Image (tube, rainbow, N blue to C red; front, side):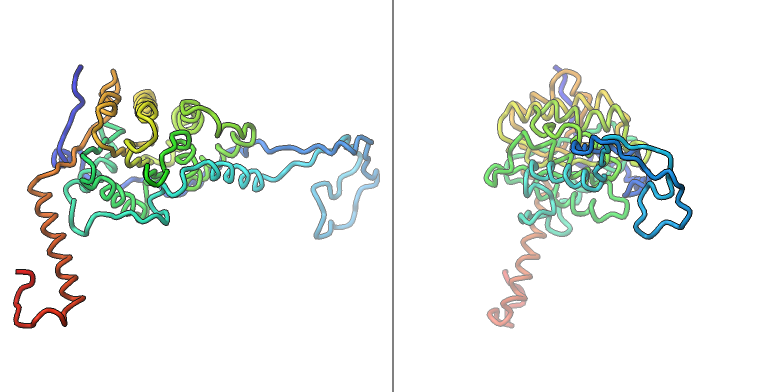
Length: 350
């Protein structure tokens, strides 16, 4: 079995990977046909209601309805149509009730980001991949042992991407087993919710689906992926004309509940990017290099779907980053406790 291409952070820094600002605007300005609205039939009005046969000659008042001025028509068993705003609110609430709460990068749960001016080699390489429209892979797997700083790196990437004028950040999901953010059944619902909040065109699409079948949120992982990702972004190519890149960021995949679910998520995403190469979705996934996750990424043709970046335990850049962190924090202690440190000490600590 052929190993997937592996490259250090520096290897991504090539002319082909120079950051190219995305040309797409942040908000969709196009509109799509309104999704089907739910109808409510007035079953008590089976009688024939007739409009006046006399035309209305006066100007309609401020409260005139759609039939102002109409004549010579009949309404049988009238049906009242609920407005789209109500449908949208109900659909979005349905999604919100089934997401992984606190998993977004800007949630109230505190997550550390990289210390200023550290991890620059890795973050620069990731951004180069994100903004390179000629990228070879639509999945980038960032892996390393526990505590190496993967979550801080992805938090930093998410924060800076969200601040860009033409942000490509579509959705983020930070798994955490200790904080019960690990339910695989809610993964693609959470992603769909964040995408619906950000992209009006996708929101209209999702509202239409959930108006017809609210039980979509109860379906299997594969069915949810088909409904919320494959159909809109692969088959319908919903955002392709308006967005070159939509970044979906998954951190701590190894903390999602169940090895089988972790592998299924990788396989679903991998097959999707291979089958629909023109989709704007790109995926940044971070995890520990667990054997079953490695095996999933090495499954058949999936080796062609992703690139990987390893966060090393010990490296020249890593040592420089640790030294900078220590010096900056000691400087903070010096400022905060300046009266406790004798002025005769030219350097503290020695």
